[in-house]
Length: 116
Length: 116
Image (cartoon, rainbow over all chains, first blue to last red; front, side):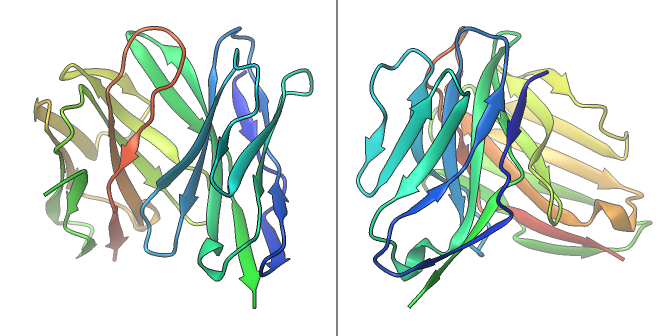
């Protein structure tokens, strides 16, 4: 079965410190894509970073990096130098091929709180 | 207007009412999606339209009825809802294609629905 698991319902981090949000996935497809989205309290989903299953290097986007360990089927998000504005829900998602295109499967989310 | 817009942002309705949620994307994408997000649950994919054809219906109750008149507009018609249908309803769009790989979904701000 295709599934995304985020085991941390809530996380706290001190401002300016780094934090790692865990994500594991399960799929038998050889090709897939992994995404992280941020959802502030306002509700919109904001794309952060993407990792393809065949990408050799870990993805990075500014303060966000993805620690991709294919053998372990994990795709953890690392946020460096946390800011107060990083407080939000974070969702890991996997794109799987479906019919003519694809679809996203989401994890349960992790609520991150950044302390001043 | 840019990106993905949704109206209304908030909706309160009785169980006997009929209402519609509207989504519009200004990105020239070929696929649109409806998601339901209940408290403490992952996003649930409800409907997918690729190239204006519905390609997914995840056993959604018939009291939810989607409509996609063109590639830029997506509606969700609601009738005789139940209190457990109260949730955040998110619309997304993407430039979908066959096969694996990068395919970001762009989300609207959501409609927060309360059913009394």
